[in-house]
Every structure is written in C-alpha cells, then in structure tokens.
Amino acid sequence: MSMTTRSADGTTIAYQSSGSGPAVILVGGALNSRHSAGPLATELAPHFTVYAYDRRGRGQSTDSQPYAVAREVEDLQAVIDAAGDNVCVYGHSSGAILALEAAAADQRVSRLAVYEPPYLTQSEDNEAQAGLPARLDKALAAGDRGAAVEMFIRFTGADFDEAMTKTPWWPALLELAHTLPYDVAITGDGSVPAERLAAVTAPTLALYGGASPAWAAASAEAVVAAVPGARAQKIDGQDHAVAADVLAPVLIGFFR
Image 1 (cartoon, helix red, strand yellow):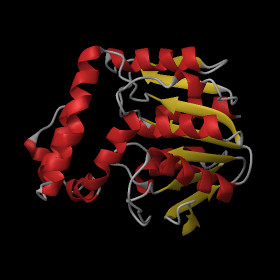
Image 2 (cartoon, one colour; image 1 turned 180 degrees about the vertical axis):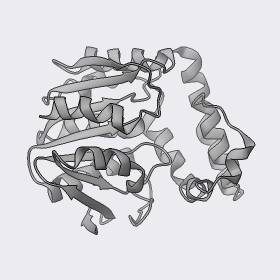
Image 3 (cartoon, one colour; image 1 turned 90 degrees about the vertical axis):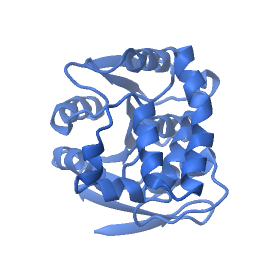
C-alpha cells in the first residue's frame, strides 16, 4: 500500500513498506522508482520492515523547483521520520551518495550500506561528467527523452542496444528521464566529499561488484578512507546491476 510523507520544502514523497522487524530504507539510483526495489524488498522483508520510496519527481512523489541535492537529502530524512529512529539505510549508485549525505547529517541512521556510489576517481571520467549536464538539458528541452536516456546509459559505460527501445520497460525509463539531471547533480564533479563524510557515525559497508569496472572498487575504497570505521566488501560475479538474491544475504548479515 502506498503512503506519503512530506519533505521540508513541502514536496510529497510516496513510499511503501513491507515485512516486519527493524526498519531498512532502500534508496534507488538513476532511472529507478520505488518499484525497482521490489525484488530486494521481497528478499529482505522476512527479516526487516522495508521502506522503498519514490525519489522526488518520480512515480507518485511530487517535485519542487529549483532542484538542490540538499532537498533530496531532506526527502530521505522525511522517510526516516516515517520509519522511526535507528534505521538502517541501503543506497545504490546515486542513491548511495544520498544515503551517505543523509547519514552524515542525521544520526538516526544506525547502519549504512552503499553499493557503488559513483564517485569518479579517474580524470577522464570527471571530464566526461563535466559536459553531461548541458547535453542532457539540451535533449530534455527538445523533448527528446529517449536521447537523454540513451546518453546517460552510454555515459555509465553500459551497452546500449536499439532493441532496448522496443522492450516493455522502455516507457518507464522515458517517464523518469527528466530526473537524470538530478542524479548528475548528486554525483557533481565526481569527487568524494571527505570532510562531510567524516561526520558519518553509523557503521558503514561500502560494496562493489567483482565484475564492475575499476572505478567501482576505487569508489568503495574512497568511502572507506573518508568514513570513520567503514569497510569495503567485494561481491564476486556482480556488476552495477547487482542481483537482489546475491545482495540480500550480505545486507541481512550486516544489518542484523
């Protein structure tokens, strides 16, 4: 069942919960809605009360302009308000950065797991990132959502096949295309905000896939260097699209 909470700037954030036990909040990345977390929520629900939410501008959540990353952190804090104190948080990709920022600002996050936050540690990635916002804005201003989605997917290093546009889930990606600049803003110039992350007090696990590009492991190690007491863990055989049934036992062990 869908429920709502209100963020600090008045934005309505839609979420749903499942299972029972300690609260775990799932924070999705680019082109994800709360429904994208369904397989992972199903795996975790026998052990936790799992909260998945639509980030602003997605699904049943509303939006407010101008956009600021700080507002998305407040959105996550509003979900924490709904879930109660002492929550565990898992963030994927750009959602991992949001989770880290929230944990730095809010000590109600009791344990934190992040999977491949896109802190780009290689100079060529940073240079490519710098030109992406303008190109996305141009495509979206022209109403070409498909071009924006393709551009973003190619930027991440994933293969883009034209057959993708014929799949049943392509329309769902197009519906979320206008939020891609938000994810780019969250990543920023790709640098790690070490001073802010030093404020994280929650035990933190930085995860990356053994089949992911080199930047993923470097990003996890950068989190470990910035967050006091954090540790990194490789999940063998996985890439950025980590499988829920492989990830879930790692999260269960860490959060419990």
